[in-house]
Image 1 (cartoon, rainbow, N blue to C red):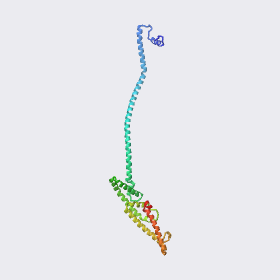
Image 2: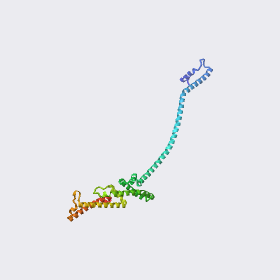
Image 3: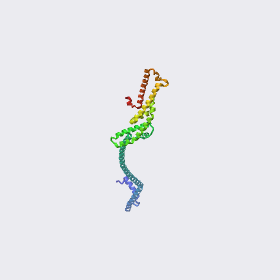
Image 4: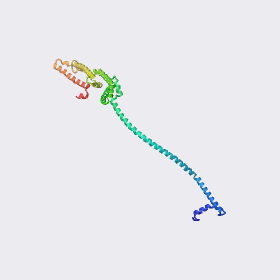
Length: 292
């Protein structure tokens, strides 16, 4: 290295302050080494002092990183545990979904079974009532449907079918008995019908009584007897008094003319037979029977 170089000159200038004024002696050179080492040590201490805050920052950063690393590891373990538990939850949810579908399927079967073999509350109440109305007639029809279904059930589950039929039998017979007595009470008013619309409860009740031939036959006999008396009274009135306000005139007015007399009576009978046919069809005939 050249002594005249800038670096060398700078170093020599720095060292010159340690060289005593008395010159370059052996003692001075030895002392120079110690001074340089002391100066170097001082510089190192100063450097350490200046870097001490930086070191503290790095140490704090290291502690933060350690804490962060511990947190990440804990979070990782938590994720693993959550993933494991969520896997079991998903599996459990899948099983529950399958069980739900099975239960829903069974529920549909049970509801369908109940709809075919169970009376609703308002039907049961109507069967226990003494008042004949639309609700009672609906209840009787419902009981008849259930009994028909029970007969089908007997083919596979005889005991269950018999128990259900037996449980319905008493209430059904009671309802038919109440209906029969109600029809008996209203026979006279129905028999006196002059061509107006019949009571739909009466006609529907009479139709239901077909399921009990004894009741139905007795009611028909009562209607026939009552209707016969009514028709006799009408015939006598037509024969002797005529129609309302004298129109048409009494049939007996032509008693002196046998042909006219008999013709008028036959005409009245013909008209009465047609009226009776319409009356009976509206009273007891089903649509199929009416067409026939």
